[in-house]
Amino acid sequence: MKKIKVMTVFGTRPEGIKMAPIIKVMENASEIDNTICITAQHREMLDQVLNLFQIEPDYDLNIFKPGQSLTEITMKALEGLEKVILEVKPDVLLVQGDTSTVFAGALAAFYQKVKIGHVEAGLRSGNLYSPYPEEANRKLTGILTDFHFAPTETNKDNLLREGYSIEKIFITGNTVIDALQYSVKEDYSFQIPLLDNIDYKDKRIILLTSHRRENLGKPMENIFSAINQIALEYEDIEVVFPIHLNPKVRQIANKIFNGNRRVHLIEPLDYEPFTNLMARSYLVVTDSGGLQEEAPSLGKPVLVVREETERPEGIEAGTAKLVGTNYDNILKEIDILLSNQKEYEKMANAVNPYGDGRASERIVDIILKHGFSKKQE
Ligand code: UD1
Ligand code: UDP
Image 1 (cartoon, protein in one colour):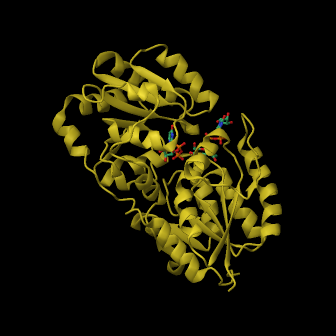
Image 2 (cartoon, protein in one colour; image 1 turned 90 degrees about the horizontal axis):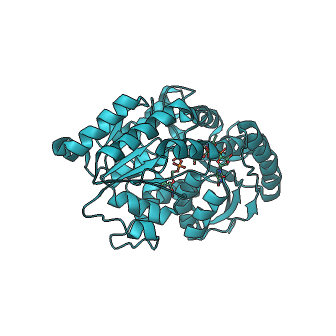
């Protein structure tokens, strides 16, 4: 029996996390032959994910360079992927999300007239510069895509509004929920002294992450200053901030938090300890995309420190709030959640607008059904 040749391409931590459950389902699909190609736009942060999910790439373009520019990532990925696509000759190439790797992957496949499946399709903030350059990457990828795997109804509507044909859009849920179900465990023990030693009963944990390009500079200083002030004011608060490896983020964090003993600046955590820490946190403050999907599913209020979001579902469900990057506003919003139990309870509801943990199965089923069809010209 001839198998469907899939080529799975990813490059950063979040793409790895969200692609891993699909790879696992494909491993058990005898009709699919999957080739994994990583650009390694991220190195250490992607390797953490590969180790956890025991994924061994067939091709590693190893393009990472500290301080890499958007142009460098895109060019190196495009060039490397062309060679691999010509060698593998896939029926379908899968990309996930909105990074430079995703756009380069879709473009490389398009140039060879290979069909493209876009996982996490149809997210839109409506502002090309926020998140930057991700909103553009999503739209550019969308134009080239044959199978839009939209996590939610809202994402599907965005695509329909842009004129994409309904036959090419599939609502699947977000595979991040599949990954989350794999990693969060009630009896989890961290085996990381700092995290094991936190008094989760008497302390309230604020989990902080921030890395967005458009927040670098003053907006990020505002976010960190507000959190720093909160940690000075509330004695029962411990802030845990696993800092992204971007030195620009680290520089701002070191400057603003400057030895505050209730703020723990730590290295990026593996996905398992990270999500289990989220499950034990009181509150999440973040500009990350993935965390906006994970926190609602775990019933954790999440304050989104951005001006726009392409993930309105958590906000509509009441678990997430878009609070911007103004110092006074962030301080006010955290203050409310820490001092007003009623307001906190209103937000602390486990809701699951991003899926039921079966998105990967749905995506693989669709590939099985349509994988051999010819690319429409
Ligand atoms: C990228 C994605 C962003 C995604 C984020 C996930 C683009 C344009 N951006 O942003 O959409 O939300 O990944 O984290 O694709 N670094 C390391 N080691 C690593 C990873 C990063 O040292 O393993 C440092 C390097 O100095 C690098 C910098 O972080 O230059 C930025 O990495 P880069 O991939 O360019 O952008 P991100 O901000 O990580
Ligand atoms: N994450 C992780 N370790 C960390 C911080 C985040 O494993 O120290 C996970 C998190 O659970 C989520 C993903 O990384 O699934 C989010 O990645 P990131 O914030 O880098 O990118 P974004 O989602 O904003 O694109």
